[in-house]
Image (cartoon, rainbow, N blue to C red):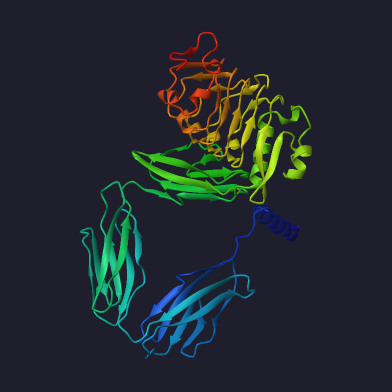
Length: 486
């Protein structure tokens, strides 16, 4: 009975141990880590070592790449031991060794550089980061010439023991980080070298990246913040990415980008300090594929499923041959051998909803006609329409759009016709917009909610004589220009 109880107890312990392991938890991936990947030696050095750190219970081996008669390497425990012949020549020489796991799934390359028989100065660390309050680090300085140290920082001292230099920093009383340069002065003809030392202030703030980059396919990136301060963040007006905070982590997520490169910022604030993180995503270069994605955006934003005429097939290619059957109302033509969108003939098409800002990416667009859509368009004219540098005719009459004329229209220098009558446009006409359209023969602004004076630059427009002010001046009841006709 006693033996049975002991057996049962052992069995229970085994079950409990196995149950305590998360069956979904993947084992840690094995790694090979080098102390550094480049080692420098004087021409008289005969030996050297390199520490190797491995995780994941793996074995490793070492081999020399391209055997060198002057160099050898052996594995001793968790480090490598190098052997070298004295370099009597004036020229530096290099050997390479490869550290690999026994199954060859992991590997690292180490470069060993032995200087020639010339004046040489080797400083193994050129940048140090110190904590606060107080910190120190050791730098190895080796030379076949005399050398000395200098620095203007009174908070930084050093102790020299042979070729080992211990740099010591006192406590930093300031909030911000401070830095100093330690110069290693060598006898001529050796050039001096410097060591940059930075030390945290009383305010600690570390961030793992200030540049978040996405491919056009999108993904998520974690911005990690370590600080002893309270902090907040705000994003730029760019709506294409999202940010979720979890303690000291900001997870930035970007969906797939079907348009051109895009950018934004995240501003992290602690106290009076702002840290700006740049967020960028690659996109599609201008061309046929971008034009197609813009048309799909227009279709989705403006009720494409309910448009009159032949229904669109948004999965079809966008070409001259397929436009009539699959992209009703879209004119496609070759530009430099590429099928590009040249016109949007969307008059009386039952458009409904806002014009998406992506319309400004149709760089070869010449004509836009959204006339007579039963006042069903909503929102304002996207400022991005000002990017349509090749546009010659724009018709937005009887559309239902509101808002002002974008100042970006000053970029539409090829425009010959602008029809915006019988809608809900408001506000004064911006100055120095129409004067940038020297070929504007036809202008219709009547029956909107415009107010204020017509800008002075319209009075001197070279095509003013061709304008019919009966199509410009009359506005809806309660609205009107104060100086019309000019």
